[in-house]
Image (cartoon, rainbow over all chains, first blue to last red; front, side, top):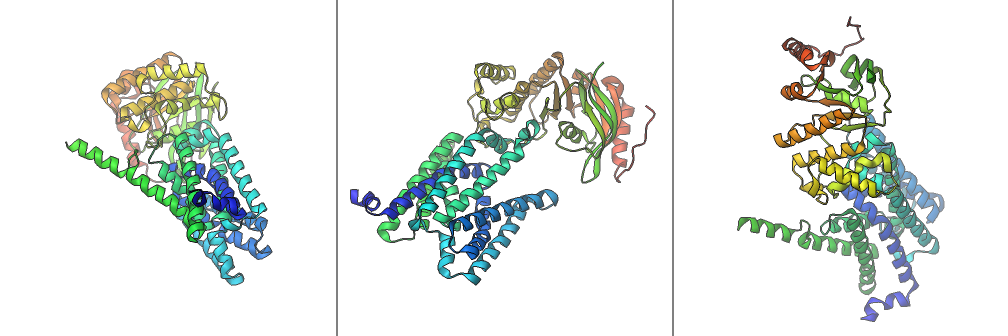
Length: 288
Length: 247
């Protein structure tokens, strides 16, 4: 039992690093996922994750697999897409989902183009699927800084954020913080996606954000409960995903996300807040 | 008589199409005014302009002694997501925003006021209920409690009694009258002309332009109402400059 669950982490430094990286990503990203879900913006997270690709690619072109260049590039590309789509939504009749979709698709195509003309397939795989088993000190530090910063900013702006989600019209009528908190929120989402893509890759980073939040929503209806439970699910998924990938030689990012996905599916069926089993019970109780 | 809000050739609209045109009037401080008019007369638009959600196309609006942050606004269709996981108490406590902002805690005196506001709208025992479990009328009561806590000298209500039951309407009209008694200025968009006659001393009749403004019985004449309907039907093309009416 010990060998199965703990020995890999005792024996191998890269497993410990991977675990620490995943813990940082889980703790920082899941609260944002909860807010994305509550604002019905779950797919926005996905779109933003794709949008950071060309920035990371340009960073890669300029200085190879450099952490700093790829991070800054990703941040710039993500924020550019967020701001441009927000601008187009305000200035034209196009709705937000369509303008965001347009910009992230352009961004994604650009990213794939840049990588495939100048890099190798191995590099593309690294960017798309991350390299959680090869996190160096700098990457780990970056992940931890991003997680700490996210938690700090969330604590600072918790009340306006909740208000902005629940009733943005009211917040706009009493305060100017509405736009500010929305902007800070988007910045944090992009930051966490960029951090997450070093560990899990652009495609998987959004999974650790959204899946735990969606699973948690089947168990509690309090915001604080949602955040705590989502973080716990993300941590558990990271730990078991790492172990699965170690014992069965599976790619790590997808393994972690699939475990989170399993949590989600179990919650859909057995969740006490509107899960399938509970729903059918209620219906049959009414019929009797 | 001091003035709460003054409009000077005030025009409002969307995409340069005016929905309210050349409004020139004053809302007296402490008045209880109903805003009435046909569909598309610009009633809701006017409230959005006063609260600052919509910038004026032209003209000016000024507040008397009131700061523009001292306004409570209850929109016609609240954009609140009813499935959002907050309790009735938390919804109502939002009304304290101007006092507590992002950081200050909600203290004992605040808690007492929240309880008081809930009691005033008849939701004493609903504190901990999720907002999703409330009926339409109960939800409107909760929104009134939030306005109560905002404690503003100027209150804007957009169709506050549409789609709620008679009992709730009667209770909430009493809340509005109580505000009036406390000297607050109230501007309410209403459809129910009978309720306006019964409870609102002042009326502003709009048909994009102002038709009449004054004591309710003088404004709500058959002739004025007919004129308002005609004006609303006639005014389809985009209009231009404000002509000064000899008023």
